[in-house]
Length: 265
Length: 184
Image (tube, rainbow over all chains, first blue to last red; front, side, top):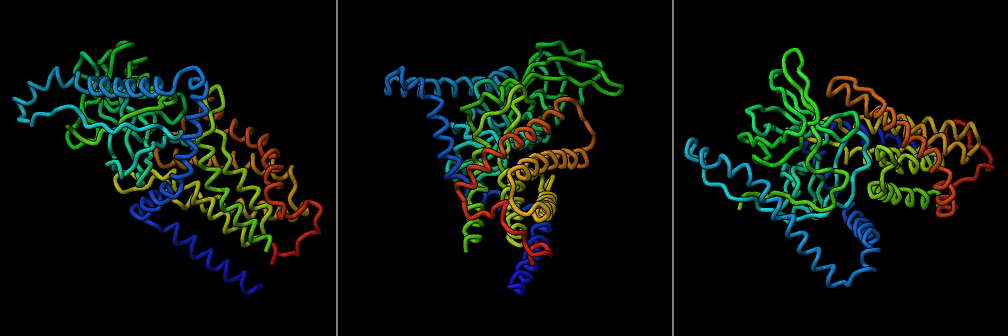
């Protein structure tokens, strides 16, 4: 028995060293594997949570009416999200197309998804959604709602995906301020609060509270141009540049339905 | 045999607790999360013999660490090393404490759960500060560490009773002390 225990300990040591030496690619596969392994429980849990949440509504309304209402609501949100993304394009796309020879862009191809749960990690802002690679989702796809940008997909299994929210410090988005030529980088903050920080602004920017901020859509980036990011809450000039605090356009804590942008139409 | 069944039940409970904690609502005012995984981990390493406890710690590190990997441009911000080392260290410390107190006790489980939660959140924050730079400690950060730890302290006795009824093969607090030498 003692020999068996020693063998188990030696094996454990080997496995521990092996896990600690894994590279990003292997870790990514392991992460997707775990996500896939947990997906049946996560989906069932999400369904139970959703049905518990809508228990009161179901008691008050007819099932068919409820279904129709939800379908129309989802369609309405999808259209509003598309419209939101098109707003900025409509303003300057004609000019850009002529000058830069960009191919004509149309609206986004959206895959509707439902939030299964907010991850319990304290320092990371991520959620799980009920769509995966089977539905055409891949890592690094933008996720939006009718109100604005939510984040981007990170780990993707066949049936569920993880979305890094814009309020995460690691989710960096090139952004521009409405009505100005100011551009900067938006990211979440490590200290909790759910606000966004926009850095690398000109210290002379003098942004005013309430000004809207949209994605800038840099070449080779993940996020298309013109998606609402948030509104300016405050601005202060630093020694070399300016920094603004933004209220996110889409409140991550209350999101239930969203859309993954899988490409252009 | 009963220890093997206990080990398997606890291994099943690990991913379950990870999914359930994602579905639970946040604690007001700042919507801090209830963390069940450290509570299950503490119960497991207190109830299992050393070698199984270490394997259980490794499994916990994978379930806790893998979802938190943020792979950006082919680089991981925090690999598996930190969670693996963290949970293995805690497994050894809790095993030694369990031996010193002659078995699995609810008080030990409660304080152990709170301490594991506290140190886990604090270590994650420190690693992030080292990798990303800066040390932005404010009231919100302190709350984000303290509240889940306090919640674990109060939640642990309830889960302890539940787990004891689910897994009656866990050793009793009144059981005779284990053989010296960490179970060998």
